Image 1 (tube, rainbow, N blue to C red):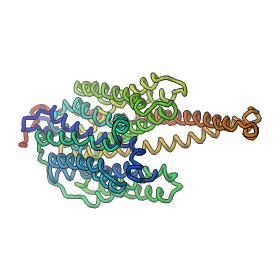
Image 2: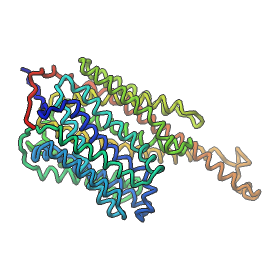
Image 3: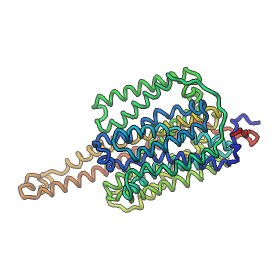
Image 4: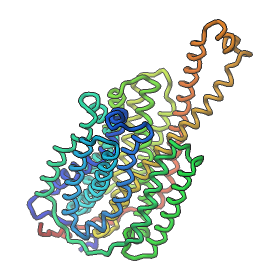
Length: 514
């Protein structure tokens, strides 16, 4: 008999496909909520009587709460049971969503978003762990493909759905829409999910405290940095300093402490550790472009919110098609490293194509580059998860899933912050370069004093607007090109990955009582 980890089959009669659909619904609901509220912020501000610089706490509170709660997934699932934790998480997330929808002040909204983020933090990692349990190892590729559709496409659809709900109804429906889906997921999960018996673990208070402080400080620094001019602010310096100290101390503690909140076996497994690096980059590339492209479409090309969201759809289609194909290829024994190579190459090529955008172009370049970027990311996600989890025992799956989700979120936060900071820096640089070429010496009609005397001050404003638009376009090109180089730079790391061993036989399937 193979030594691979056994598979948990639900004794309630539910098929693995049913379990997959249940956890996909829960995971999609929580991942979608991480971005669905973004476009509704301007509409929330007057309703909640919030200032422009404080309304962003609606997003920050959710992100920070998720970052702190996610590492608890493994310990809580062993302590109270994976099925119980999933049910309570869905119930709490749904209730918190309703409370967000009826909040009447910013303080209430921030509190309810923290509850929502903390409750939802467990759902996606538990969902991934369930998939690995109920499917035999030779089916992990296709199962990861279906689950990945909800995880990877959620951030793309979030702004589209949020914009449509806000424009068509009211911003409160961004949260209230979770109620029917939450009730459906809760009822379905209670009837179908198995109860795997996991070994009880002690609570690593020191590890959790260090990780929670480090992650909270990092997320706050990334979120507040753009507002406070990064390291020019003592607050941001302090947050990054605390983050570095806390995460460094946590890493030392995790490596030295058996059975910690993050088992050191995860940090010594070569595939798992390399997979952590890759999933961070995938989060960076996925979320950063998701944040940049809609803004570019609206500010430079004049597309309305819904149309800009529609132009993001080809990326989701490409991602879904690639995930389905990758799942089939993994199941047929194709070397996952070949698919990862193709995925990073296609993603880098698509990002390079985005750096060739022109200020005067139609929708076709957005559709083509978006489709291929999604296809590249889809070819990365499935084989990466399959390889990273291949050698891990069942007891570590919830921990590994939680860490992967956490690192993906960190990659997304870092990606947005760095991309926006680089965009602003390059815009200023390009504006200075372009402006330096417009002087009364080479263009006499561009003398501001002469134009003002002639009563043509509007010409100066139009000229400055044109320079601003061109500078912003150059900055977007620079950011996309930098991201393309990053995707290509990950290719040498593929040499570190090892191909998974032969999957377990069907004799390894173990049926546990529900």
